[in-house]
Every structure is written in C-alpha cells, then in structure tokens.
Image 1 (cartoon, rainbow, N blue to C red):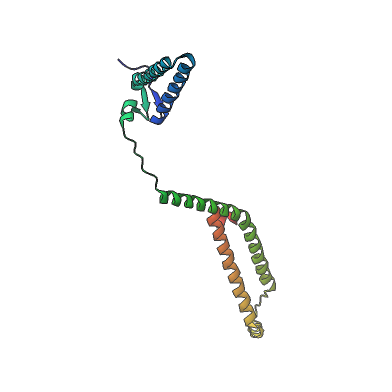
Image 2: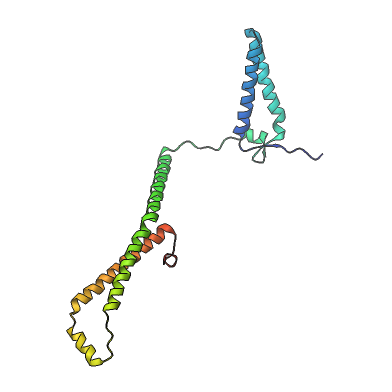
Length: 188
C-alpha cells in the first residue's frame, strides 16, 4: 500500500529529542498538579514517562531526520570530535584579522579615491605646464641654438620628478584597484 501522508521531517535528531523532552516535562507537570500523595505522584510520573516514550517509539516510523528513518539515526553514534583549543584560537584570530582587513578596506574605499584624484589633478597640471612651456621650432639652426642654450640638468630633474609622480600615482591606483575591485579604465 502506497503512503499518502508524508513523514514528519527534522534537521537533526536533537530536534526530535527536544520535542520528546518538552512533552515529557509537560506531562510530568500535569501529573504533579493533579496527583496528591507521594505514591500516586511517583506512579503518575512513571506512567507519564512511559507513555511519552511509547508514543515516540510508535511514531518513529513516521519520522525522518535529513531523509533518514528516525530509528536508524537514533541508533547511530554522533560523529563529533573533541574541542581543539589551538584550532579554536586560530579560527578566532583569523576572524579578527578578517574583520580588521574589512574595516581597512572600507576606510581605503573612502579615502583613496580622493587621494588619487588629487594626484591625478597634480599630474595633469604639471603636464599642462610642460605643454604650455614647449616651443615648437621648425628651423634646424634655431633648434640647435636653443638646445645649446638650455640648462639641461633642471629639465632632467623635472622629468625624473614627473616619472616618480607618475609611478606613485600608478601604484596608488593599483592599490585602489586591489581594494575596491575597480579597473583603471573604470576609474578613469
């Protein structure tokens, strides 16, 4: 005969044992409330406990724990390990580290875009000054004359400073990318 009524499902056997214990406690409270003498009370408690145990024994074929029959799960030994204090401490340390890194990332997401904007604006300003100071010469003799008259050292230092600023900007942008998940194209 095919079964029309589904079995009662539970996640763990502790869930069913908890329900059984709560029903037993309720039955015992009722027995204590209605029986007067100690002999009657003791007998009532024994009968109530046996009744709850028998009820769950009869209901067991209609109970499932994670898709397994309750009787099978009830007989299985729990697969639990003893607490490893070193492992627990390591997990707590790693969780604290994750929380600290998360806070640092949140802070950098707030501050790095502004810092990157300032650096990029400074770099653009310096490059525009270079473009404005540039003089295009078509005459070869004038060009050689101008090159000879230039003080090359300050110009080289200025170019090196621009390269350093550019490299720092790229470094900051790549840090920003690591912490924010954005690409350099998306930032620009």
